[in-house]
Length: 244
Length: 120
Image 1 (cartoon, rainbow over the protein chains, first blue to last red):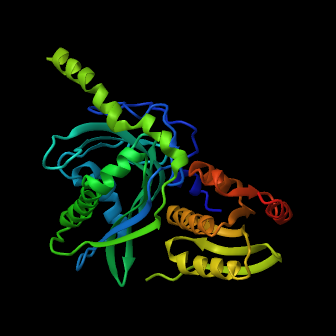
Image 2 (cartoon, rainbow over the protein chains, first blue to last red; image 1 turned 90 degrees about the vertical axis):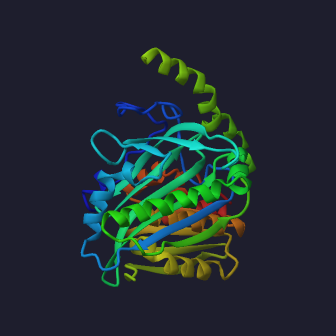
């Protein structure tokens, strides 16, 4: 057994705890939440892969991954703010997220959503995050780099279900799935652009692993981070005023 | 495309249960080998598929994802998925990823086969 395996994988936890909050992040919908896998969500289970080749660039997968981890928040699209742990991306740490979800993109204003994800796997060419209860998706996202036919690729792969019926509706009918796909395509393009690759297309592979709903998980709606973030908005506004 | 570093053999242990012996690394590149082994294990109408991890060398997060895919496939066929031979390290990873809530883990083959026979 490779002894590094103990550092690569996070230790299991029943509930997430926050020890240090990065500057600017909000500890909302994180503390006390259980990490959830694709088995605990409500909606259809999808595996989606977004990959892009760094054509002609002489960089190793490990070099690309080192930059990706270091500049992770910078590669996100506008409106998505990621707050990585103070000590960088490491197994067991929490990456805090502030995003905006619109119930009807382009027509209704976005609702700010605060949450965080736990890094459960981290090696030189990959890291994987696991979502908490209440997050829009229940499952994992892996960010990886690899070599194929002598060239380095960057890849985001998600395996997740919508966490509850409200999110499932949003993903299916309110543009949520499209927004999510655009987000991850933006991320792989931004990583590629950092290495000087601008014209490579993103390969998108979608696979519906389980089209059914898990009705036993319908109560997940109670933890819905979007709804809870919405109720938290007045508190956020008061704090903002008091800080002035 | 990198080659798969895993070998999987299928054994029928009871009329209702098949064991997949896994030897090597379970990563994203193991998908075809694992799904072929599953198809083979299911071909005689087995309602329990037992994964033997005794000779597992390495499994990464993509490998865990493959197990989720296999689990869903088995559940849709009305089959149960069981496992044995996991080291403490990989038992912990099953706990971390909450796979242990859907794939029952046992210390040895006899226990897993007995559980399969009891319909667990």
